[in-house]
Length: 87
Image 1 (cartoon, one colour):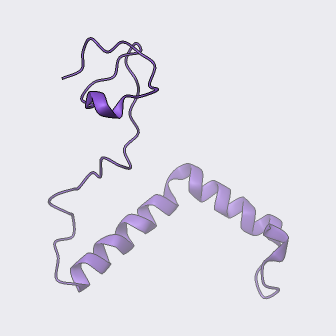
Image 2 (cartoon, one colour; image 1 turned 90 degrees about the vertical axis):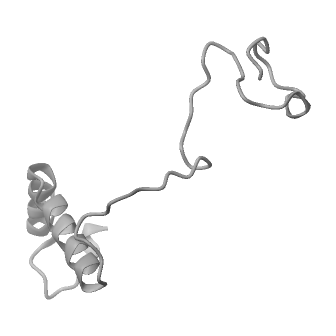
């Protein structure tokens, strides 16, 4: 992939060297953070968000010791585990 860089850029090994170095020292993260702040300010928002939304469909959860909690019994057909803690 690095070999497919446009020809007007330096050789891919040099570009990759700087990319790796900046990733390790946090330069890319700082650039991304500053750009995000600028975009937020330009759109009339605060530089830092004041709230966050977590979608429960995207948050990974772990099963605790084989128990299933919070599911309706009708939804548990074929689910293995201890059902004593079902609410």
